[in-house]
Length: 97
Image (cartoon, rainbow, N blue to C red):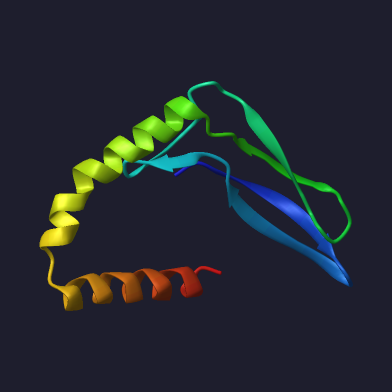
């Protein structure tokens, strides 16, 4: 996974955070097809946090195609199994935030 570390100034100190700057499509982090980026600003002070990939129509087409390929296997899972996967994902997000 490609990410970049940035120092974010907030209130009384600074924090180093790792930001993912690529699109997540078909299980992989990737640059946009166009190579376009969008600047992300810190809402606290307007400072630049990162330049992240700006998805466009070609990236949307790839993401939709990947979702369509993945859907039959997801649909075949029992509801309880899907729920457990989503809860596991939520736990992972909380553990890494």
